[in-house]
Length: 381
Image (cartoon, rainbow, N blue to C red; front, side, top):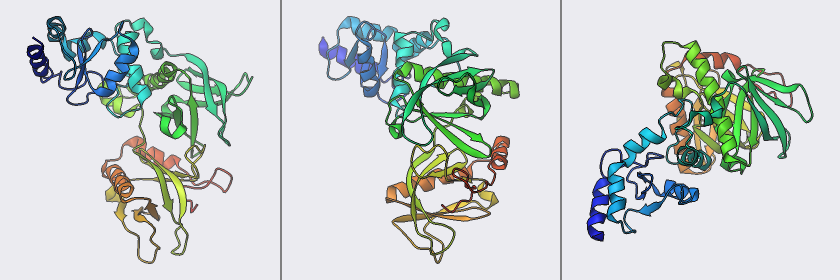
């Protein structure tokens, strides 16, 4: 009986819909929640177990024995029918995680679906409201200390307040904000980075909350406002078409070394971040402002990236060069694999056609007067 049921479940997971994880889309799931009726990958099975058996009962497709009732339940439901139930009213703004995304995003997606049933009961979707406020732990701009600060979203503007302040310290139009989850860099499982242009320079704000549910609530609230703004600005475009533009994960990030424009300039270690068409570099990963910002245009406009260095420049480790119409940047990666990753990421941007908002970004990245956080976009630092 056990062998027969093992064969039945092995055939069932091969069917279309079942052959990818119900929660993150990973191929060839090896686990299942037999009371919910879904096939899941090893990573998602771990989160299902954390829900408790009163919510999800998980078994291995290969290592555990299946009885008739359990297999019949999987045959009756499966991933497609379960999705119709547990994602019935998922708002378009809610980011559906993929395998490899930050754990907090995946965990809260699974809890939202099966534990809180947010996409069955729409009244639980508080992140689609036009006004939200709460306390987040915010990093100060000049050190690594975090303090509780009030944040608020109202009238499509994100505001945060200083300690005991009645007036906001900053008011940022949501349309100008990019938000990404940054748990590894921030060393907080619920770390989140807000990025926006302020007076021609990029500003980074780092926040976290002890509750993963709360940080994902804020993350999707910002995505919801941005979606609404884009739908008003482009009424003939569907929500599905604008979803990719709500928030951008950084295409690449990490330590590189760079030289100045002169042949004899030394290499200096910098933290680089590729954010859409902006390549930024910083003294450290959690700087409030980049030392320099490089706009990446289209390859047909004299932008390119190549391994190696221009003639006359010193080589270090695994060098590569970024060529722009106004200046060439000589960079060095610590490993061959890092160089391959960075060159591929930059090439992908240069291949992509420019959008109207990209041209506006280039205009907004202005040259700055010398100052503490005000190097121009062609800084030699």
